[in-house]
Amino acid sequence: QAQLVESGGGLVQAGGSLRLSCIVSGLTFDDYAMAWFRQAPGKEREGVSYISWSGRSTAYADSVKGRFTVSRDNAKNTLYLQMSSLKPEDTAMYYCAARPFGGRWYEVMGYNYWGQGTQVTVSA
Image (cartoon, rainbow, N blue to C red):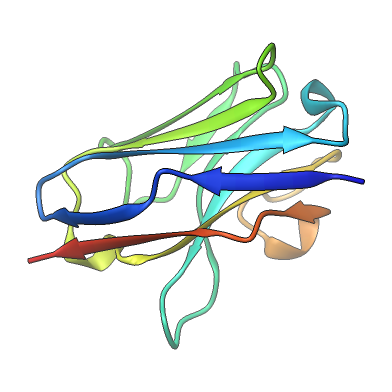
C-alpha cells in the first residue's frame, strides 16, 4: 500500500526559506513522476512543481519559477521542494503526489497517490 508522507512545513517570515520532503513507501519510487501541489483556504488545489522519474525533466508554476527547486533522491525514495524568497501568497497546505503516466503535469486528476500535506505559512 502506497504511502506518501510530507514534512518540513512551518511558519516563516516573508523572504525566508523552507525545504519540504516527501518520503514514499509501498511503490517503486523511480517508476513514478512526482509533483508538489498546494491548496490555500477557499482555493482550488494547484500544481507547484513536477519532476520526472529520472529527475531530468522538471516544471514549475509561473508563480514559483526562480524561487522553488524540486529534486528527488531515488535511492532514498524521497522528493524535495526547496522554497526560497517565500511570500505570504505561498501560504497553503503543500501535498506531494505520484503518477505513473504522462499528461499535463499540473492536472490533479492525473495523480494516483497523495500525501496528507504539510502546512506552510508565510507571514508578512
